[in-house]
Image (tube, rainbow over all chains, first blue to last red):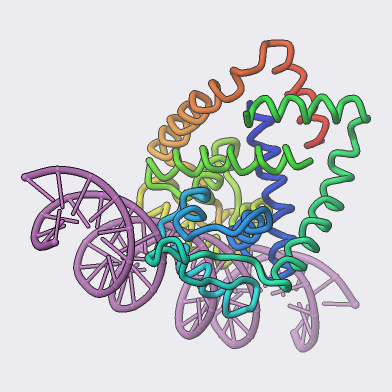
Length: 128
Length: 128
DNA sequence: CAATATTGTTGGTATTACCAACCTATTGGA
DNA sequence: TCCAATAGGTTGGTAATACCAACAATATTG
């Protein structure tokens, strides 16, 4: 239990450091990470991250100014705003993901392949 | 690997929610957590959390105003400032820890005892 | 003893995050 | 159908987090 918390902080530190190297906060990185899978609406993003919608407005606005994503009124519901990665945003999030994996590899590399599979299985059970 | 990151965010969400219920940011909670083990100097705290010393000044000042900790010039080095929990601070961090453990139990409870031991062993290997 | 390094604080700025108030569009009932 | 209620976002306000640069005070080193 305590190990879970300690590991959480270590991993968060890695993520935060790499995000910062690309001028991203951890939250911004997570926004891009969600959009990497699929375009989303503001409310979806906010709900997923557990943030207020007004917080999302700011995050998305700054990322948009930077050219990482675009937003536009949804054709389905004219109140709603669809947010999607730009090409530049996708490249950035892909690059960051590679770096994150590289950074975590030596970390996870302390385990042999069987242990690694087991860890993945255990954590997947948790997140289920 | 991806499971590690996903679990990190889930655990962070739990910690953040419980901290917020006690009017603490996650960072403040971590400060109290460090001081729970031993009194520390400003620089130690900042280094441990990977924050600038000026950030620590603010965090500690607000926590002090709230009566959670006290700071005082170190007798050893009159530049340095020693920070320690107050009784109230200790009670708060203990209460929060109990809540965190309670909140993570159903989470970790999806594993049987043997798996849980294994998980702890794997994570301890990581954090080593 | 003078130069340098360490420890913290202060002041400045940007970002994150909340809430309340608001506008616009959609939905549900009467 | 039409009006009230709800849902989706933005704006404005505040507090906290976090950085950097500049500074004061003390320690250390040459």
